[in-house]
Length: 93
Image 1: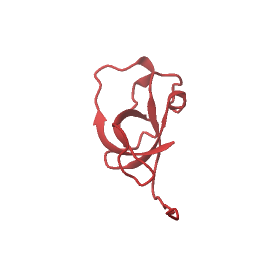
Image 2 (image 1 turned 30 degrees about the horizontal axis):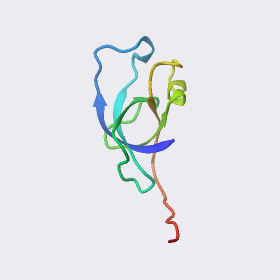
Image 3 (image 1 turned 180 degrees about the horizontal axis):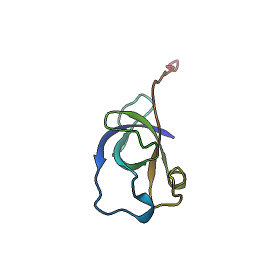
Image 4 (image 1 turned 135 degrees about the vertical axis):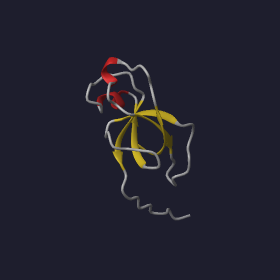
C-alpha cells in the first residue's frame, strides 16, 4: 500500500465490462514525508467515496483488480482506503 493524493477525476465514454459504475481517479503517489513521488497514475476507486484533494491508500498490480466488485478487471491501481489522520514518527539522524 502507498499513500497518494487524489488530484483529479477521469471520465471515460467507454469502459471494460466489469468497470461500469466504478469511478476513475487521477492520484499522485506520495513518499514517507508526503511529498510527490513519481508520476500521477489512474486508479479505480474501490471505496466509491474518494474525491479530489483527499489523502488515500492505493494498491497496485493484481491486488488492485481483486479490490473491485468484479475481480480480475484490467486495472493497474485501486484506491482501497481514505486516510483520516497520519502520525509520522521522525527517525533519529
